[in-house]
Length: 418
Image (cartoon, rainbow, N blue to C red; front, side, top):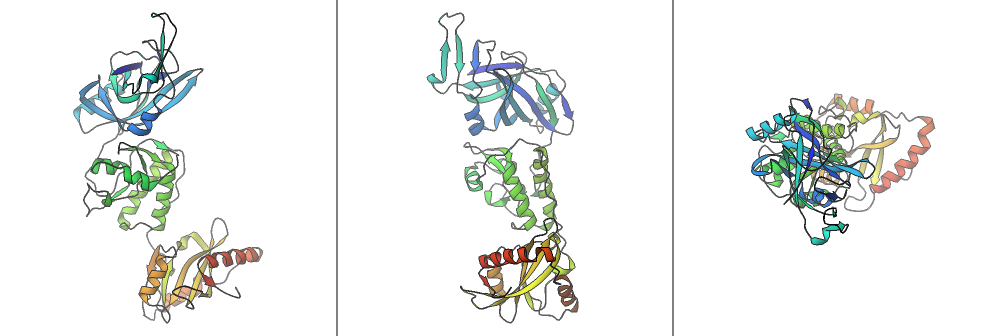
């Protein structure tokens, strides 16, 4: 195995965290071994090998942590350096010692260990044996170590933080500091790649079922980390996190209301680490006007707090299983944009059974279904009247009508005069 080493300076920025950030290898320039590692040489390993073990002194018996993120970064001229984020295993004495040594500036150099997959991954420049330069175009990155002295110039430890790793909590998985990426996201592909038990699954998701088997994929929800071909989790994906937050607010995934805040904190932290502002968590408490109605089955597709005004129209379904049935539509004006959107559907009990209403809602974007109470609730009636008062601003009336006609057509709803 080939080893390349860089000098490093360390800085502990938060005693409560367990992350070490360092430049662990120089690329594009000649190192102490007379080699030039190409800036793209680590790319395939980063894509497929993470997390990569962190050792002490290249001793495989001294596993102290793992690489959770790595990225070549341009420095100047032809020089690149391998920025590496490592998480020390603070549940072991070796991991705590390794972090302490780095944070205290007792260990100042890093060394990467790798193999060369094929002969043609190396080219040679020059004919004199004493001055020949090897160019390493591709490598199989195996591990990174903290060492006393090495061969790669100009490394520096960027930051060191300590973070307890917990595996016992159920429900919302505690937030954690990790790498992030903005690549395309394929959740089905990522989920299919996962290989391993609770540790791997917890590192990639934001929630685990308290009643489920923690070793099974089926017990986990809100997957948002890239998973390499090795079956292990890597960087958090910004697009996946954004989608997960949207689904959390829309309650598209069923989890206990008591866990929603913890899941939100987990996901929101990733966005903040990526320099993004997460959307606010919508309240789990339902406003008064969203209570069940006595004569309508309610199918909610948007949260009431998104809107500042409401109005209703009565329409008729056209075609399909429920052809000819009437439906009341609650339209809401969005607080931020001023656009009118469909907020919920009310299905009268005279025409819809509970099962029919639930089935229709499941196929039309329902985030909550409430069957009619069958009780004469004067408060609910009053709420309905006050919350659906027709308050459409004159300057947006024509635009709203056009938008609503198009949206109703998508739902298979027909109305001759809107």
